[in-house]
Amino acid sequence: MTIAATPAGSAMVPGAAPPILQLVGVRKAFGDFVAVDRIDLDIRDGEFLTIVGPSGSGKTTLLRMLAGMESPTSGDITLRGQRINELPSNRRPTCLVFQSLALFPHKSVGENIEFPLKVKRIAPPARRARALELLRMVRLPESHYGKNVMTCSGGERQRVALARALAYDPEILFFDEPLSALDYKLRKTMEKELKDLHRESGKTFVYITHSLEEAMVMSDRIGVMRDGRLVQVGTPEDIYTRPADKFVSEFVGEVNVVDAVRRDGVWSAEGIDGLRLVVPPALSAADKAAVVIRPEFLRFVSGPGGADNCLSGVVFNEYALGSRIQYQVRVGEKTFLLELSRASAWRGEAGAPATIGWDADDAIVVGA
Ligand code: ADP
Ligand code: MG
Image (cartoon, rainbow, N blue to C red; front, side):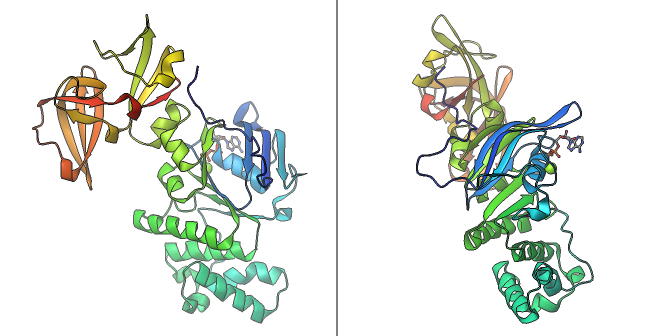
């Protein structure tokens, strides 16, 4: 089968810098239950890597092993070539930022940020100078230095926690869904700021979220987890345009999936009578596949012949999605989603028949 899938592997690019962290065959079992299995992954020095996956897919367990709060049942984790499977978290050059921030209550913003520096016995004037620098880095005014953290807003506390994590001067920062408790607007702002902070700090960020949208905004690379396995690792562009399988393509967003089968050299779509599917040439070796069509690649056509693949149906719903409009079109038993920009909205009425279509090259074909 010639369907392209990005390997979730750790193949070294010749001449590329050695990975800062390397995972080989990492597995974690709790009794009989395997939470994380067969993970091979190279984490590059200085990259922003995000692991996404549904709740329960093993993200936190994986991160806890990287941070030294759990050790793998089998497999190896190496840091710059040194095996660190059993090295406790306080002896690793890493720092974990949680959703629950674990700041010291009743202490000032400055005292919280300076805590790691105090532990290292850095003199008060140097501590203060560094704290002020970190405040600027996380976009908090210097006037917050003396403020009690309990009087800070959620977003401000998040920034204080970040500044404190940076004060440890770790080589790698781990984040476990740090923004999930924030409201939408603040989360969007913080996503962009985290990306800036990553660039300014030059550190390696390993970030966990169940939101692919969040991952897309911030990451250099994304790893997608499902049932303890890493099913794909790639750039946001790879994940979006070349999903490794149906699961990844559906995780990326609302999509249309047509199960395609070939009989006697002819492709047809399950559940859609009479459609002779035109598929991309890459598919010629297989006889079963899932054809994924994003709603923005489906369009209304004037009639048969208006696109490589045409279907007759009925438009039965339309939703305004801000600048875009989504239509639900029923074709036999199946519902297709089609999206248009508001400016080119369809002028028909709900309940009206319509022909929709897509060109073979606009579909993504993944293993069935
Ligand atoms: P995620 O962070 O992706 O939501 P987790 O890594 O927290 O997933 O959990 C993955 C699976 O492992 C879940 O089914 C969870 O119940 C299980 N699990 C996690 N920690 C333990 C533990 N200490 N003992 C038993 N099962 C656990
Ligand atoms: Mg989790």
